[in-house]
Length: 363
Image (cartoon, rainbow, N blue to C red; front, side, top):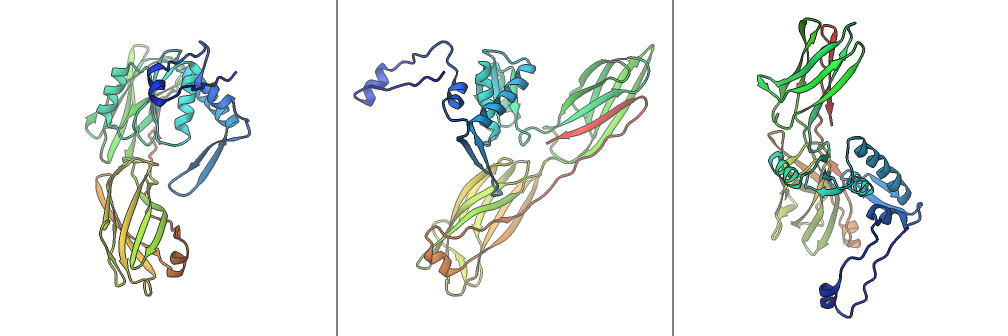
């Protein structure tokens, strides 16, 4: 069933003073948001920084949020529980909120720009029992422990480390022959490349043993791509506007976009440079620049992009194509996409002694 809230007041001031919610006890926002529309109707458009697009119908949003709700329920989320949602603006964000509401849980929107301390404070202060965290925010490795022997393994504990620094231990417990268990090791505190090891200490019968898995870890890296760049010409002044999208999985900081200088182009007041700051993984931020241009002779416009990723400052110059007739005839300008992409690698752990330790990077 769908309910509608009507406003019948003579003025805004009266509405502020007199309005009060009067909803049925079984009202649920998730069912209201996806239930009162035609299932084939478009509920959500998504455009990513790389220009790719996705479309979701109301029926798809309903079905997908049901799956998320089932996953949360499997993890013990019940009516009245608080769930932190640390997910950037992409389809997963509304799906998690819808899933929480379907369970009667309270969803807590939290910024992906929060650091570990800020997130910890808000999750503890709100009493959240679960947090749904996007992989662009949380870096972890799954350690899978399998008993390949013919006797039970008891008191198994994963003791992880990054180089010489210990990370929090993770308890596994008892494993029967052929049984596996997986624990997650948080790597958010590992800020530089390191050899990550996962030693498993265990008991079998009256004896103790250990097995070690390892791989070379590199923190996630980000990469900035300029997308949807629009050029508009007014006399000899060129205005450039668009988005700086982070197509990587790691956060980039200190993002600055600036007009470069060439024989026919030079930076101009008021926006020679544009400071963006921090851009989270899979997020984007708008910018606008101005330049003086010799439109009769210029064929490209240089734009310098500077940002810091993985502790390294990177600068690249993108040459945007310029065609005077196209820009002059079209007030919306022309769209140009360019990219600077940096990848990252994952490692595979070592299998040792009757207990196998397999590490799998989350991202």
